[in-house]
Image (cartoon, rainbow, N blue to C red; front, side, top):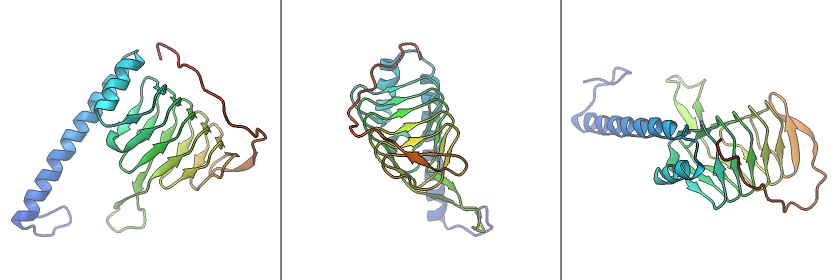
Length: 197
């Protein structure tokens, strides 16, 4: 038996590939089930199943309907954080989201991508870290390896390809510094999420 590159495989390699494929199928099935759970209009119900799948969710945090997960066991969400509708959270590497973070609808957070210069188009991944009191506007995209500092703001539709420092407001494609936040004391609470979203 040969792999997709034409290399002859040993029995041990065949067994390993079969086990990996079986695990991948189970993970894909779990992701599909979580996608279905994401459309039940009850925060408590969704949180229960997300936690069961391995997502760490802090006290008072809410994940709105339609969230897509990839490998949920690598995703950690702090307390009093609100995740908007239709979010993509890529757990193929670590995703760490802090406390009091507000992520608007249709944001995509990826930590794995293809290496376009690799002869086999292999994937590469790096963790994404979002610190406390960050606001990410609608339809923003966060790419692998990005760290967003405490209190930073990502404008709607921005594509964040590199780190954002504390209290910076960035926007555009790729995201660039617009200005710094003027607020000095970050101690606000986000409040409760909408019941049927």
